[in-house]
Image (cartoon, rainbow, N blue to C red; front, top):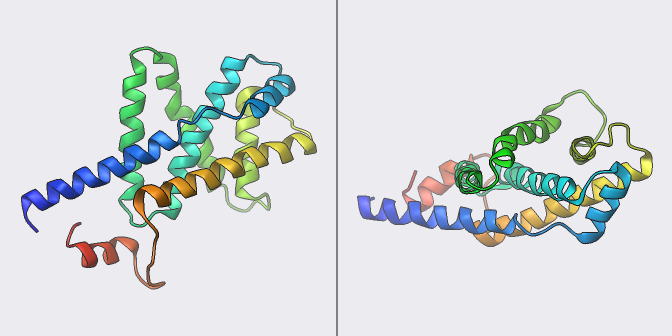
Length: 184
């Protein structure tokens, strides 16, 4: 594979990642914002900011877990990093907080030995981040619904941006990708 073909492939992947990340920037549902504001007793700005962080974190988690190949998550992470750098000019505090938020959402998935489902653990992070440290059952169910909708939307956007995976069970996605395209 030549240099020009590699450059085209890199641009294609970057464009797909940018389309995917753009899909993660949809404003939060007004009813969810109002519900979280009421339940946490915080401002609209705090809730909208946290929901935006949650969308990005869930989107990156989806890219890591459901992507066509092993490089997709890196492509998406680079696109989110570029977005955060652009935002840093006008929203420095938000850009600086992204890593802390990302790590907390990601770490919620990595907890082993707990019977609680992963989306419920992510919902707990969302609630804690807006100020609800001990959610009731109804709050947790509603927050899981928010997280689930974000995950489903991210999955659909990932498929739209990168395509559908059709891979053998016994092979790494990156191996199949290299064989099919000559890239990698």
